[in-house]
Length: 526
Ligand code: TNX
Image (cartoon, rainbow, N blue to C red; front, side):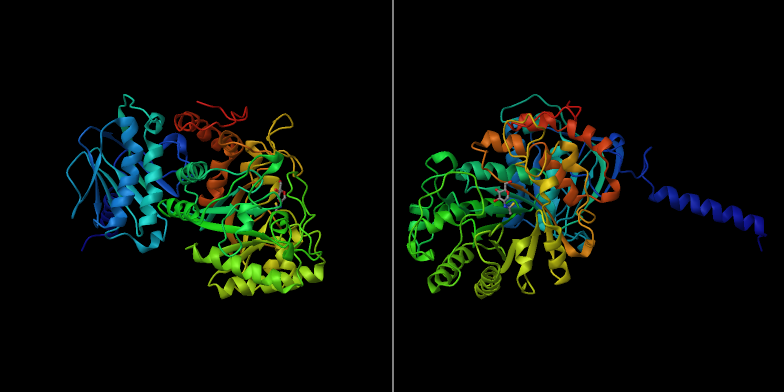
């Protein structure tokens, strides 16, 4: 029998062997610090284990997918579409039953770990191969954004660049903190073309945003064609803030935007704001007004002066018809009913109205989301409240055991100016420099909430002062990547001092994508 000392030596050597066989094969430790890891990713992944390898993409490489379904082929085509303009390689997508030969990329859900959930992925980069594995196709799509961010910034260029197209070796294992990571665009105050909206959606996707909240109606414009009430778009959509021509989306336009978002694994949440913020509708149909008279179209930027007539049958017919048509063209489970700033609706009427509208939404097979004021009503079990300014309302939603989305105006309103000298934007909720936009936690933002109450975060862009795609870019970037990270990454791994450096490396990426971002002096731009 061996003595104790021999046993001890045996044990130590066994431990050493087993440790070194599971540890990374190179120098590095498991780490979250991006200065020593693969690239400068936003949002920061859950875990990164770099290696000393480098993968180089060269002409002739292919993207292989398994299974070779139409869905995974489309995911592969998305990546090819992002790599081909700058590399000029004409990368093709093909099916593969097993990992392909050296020099290729492999996207697969085969054997994907269910623990990765809907959006998680594992990315392994060796000298020979790029392997992206997920449980679901959405996870592959999120992982593709990581691959894009690991290439040099010029990979985003619309014209051929010289490369070399290197990826750092290692393994990234990633999944989000919150399932709801949204951005809202107000197309009512100023109208944006289908192309402009799609371009924005594609930029959101680069930062793993998965919800697009589409603010379609307001006092200044009704932007979605409703067949049963055609004057809403025809008249209510005919102007905008400042008196320009406005515009509206046909139902085919809307379907195209939804499909475009769907290909990016992004859910569209349409908002029909009511009972306030309804002047465009009131101006289109006399029957919606308690007075029976249509007000003129409105092109200013005041809020709180309009209300549907909450006690008339015509109003409920209107709500039912509009929600019915919008629900029918929306594959996602939610309809946003607004409910904010109903300052011209008597509170008892407001409560009865919101109670009824939630039932109407459910009757069309959807769940209602509303701004936090709806917590004054009796929230249906499936209804969701969106916080923007009044903490008592959002706490009331939580007391009713409802989930909330966090869009605190003092932190996440992208229409707020960065500094007092920003020419675009408003400042009623304060000025929001890039650091203010980043340094908050959705769970501690409002006292009395816990992680389980919170679906996630959303950054709205109201457009009273925002007229062009270049204006949208300027207000959203570079705050938006920070909101994306707040929604995706663990709170414990986040700090401004490190983030600002990482964000600085995204300057050339945004430039290559043609984004007109605000070059905040808080960020050490590369
Ligand atoms: C408040 S936020 C509003 C919007 C305005 C925005 C401007 C919210 C639910 N209502 O109608 O566009 O302020 O910052």
